[in-house]
Image (cartoon, rainbow, N blue to C red; front, side, top):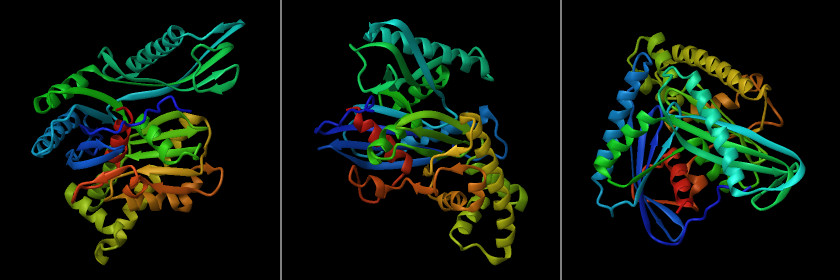
Length: 389
């Protein structure tokens, strides 16, 4: 399916790409030239890991990180960007893939207006559900995405349904919304540095688009995005983004557990965890770290299982797992998913294949300036933005 497919034009264009997650705010200055995305500069500002997760405090720390990232980017001597693209991981948005169906006794022609009306109805229903479930009921929302990811006429998939005749029409529609107050605040902050058009998108939709290009023959997979506070899980089957769910256990959950159990500060816990996954931790604390990290692993796997079951009503998942995670703790998550315990928490169709999304996978589509960091989230965001030029 190619509802998202837009190929980058062969001209030199400049843009700013920002990624707002729950661990940090990353940003990059991008040049698109001759079909290649050149990452001229890439920076990242950590969101302070607080001992307790409080929504208001988290938002304040995230805004500080955004301000710091914008400040660092603005110091680069590059041409002025044409636009700023912002990509969200959880908890900044809510998303759902909804299925809309129409069945009539006699054939009808599918028009653009008819399709737009179906999408609008699903979006309105989704917004109502999000508002009803929100802890901030009454706060206005803004639609970020409303994209048809699959269309079927009379039970058969089609790339372009407009103008065709059918008795049965079915759309799978990816929808995402975010609190209006957050988007307004981010726009204000960004425009103080770059007075350009600001657009918003989700990492779930961006990664679905990009990974389909990178793995054109991979129709079924699970994409796991490990953030600071939250882990997002996207289920793709038959090249359709069926589900996007999340659970509140990410990188910071592990750090807090180490901090609590070993009586260390959060920065000390991060250093200790990094040394542990590199096999360099002191022998005197190795056993204690192993005990805590085993407990963390089991709790993360339990949360993963519940999220998958709540999303699909089954534990069977594709055997291919693609993972986006910060490099400092990527080996721990990679090892967790390859161990027997992970298999016990889910049922794969075949033996698991776990792939960490790193720069090597995108080398034909991306280039980097000297000493520019290879941020896995920025890479996918950049390729997604390049497709829309």
